[in-house]
Image (cartoon, rainbow over all chains, first blue to last red; front, side, top):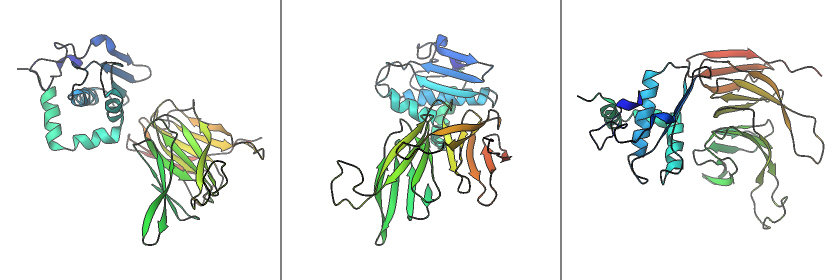
Length: 115
Length: 183
């Protein structure tokens, strides 16, 4: 699932850039939880929030409603990881962001399949 | 946001991890207290009947109970401060496994209900008070799958003791009858 998300600044997928490592996806089906830890390409990467949001949206659209999704930055790999993690964890904030049609379009572009 | 009836107070819960209290001053409302202590977003606040205590719930998975203190009651506070201060007298931690979205304080029975992102509803009751000791609460009810998704709100019926309403991301509203445990 995570493999096919595009980095907004690069036409390659996140996995090819080593932005998201698959080993850091933990699924607990019995408890209906998914935790994704992603490592931004650069510690000050300003796209981290957008990448995280795209991952979150992809999970929301792909998984059954019963799942609790936790998307956060790999500890120690980003300058603003606390602030980014907090935004990604706030479901009202995420919902509000996705009401922004421009932002939604960017997210959809990140998520669209590579041609 | 919630109103404290007796003291004409407005309380707000914030993404900045604090609770702020506002009172009316002439034609405007001013911030008269900032309650710090939670480690993450505060999602909701609820006053106890009488307005002397406030409960707050947070993304940090705890509920905090704050006690209003008359101005000058706390040592070290400068004299002449007209605003009462609020002190955290109890923290309920270890009960909730995810964000707590709402807390409701029953004005009939004093019971505290919480709405949690782990789909559960919990009720806490205060233990018999020892005069100089801070308050303690016990978990008296826990419904693990109250809903099939996050519980966002809980509300006690103001007239009928034990009647609790809840709502969830799953689109349902549920009504519950809470019975205080015997003994």
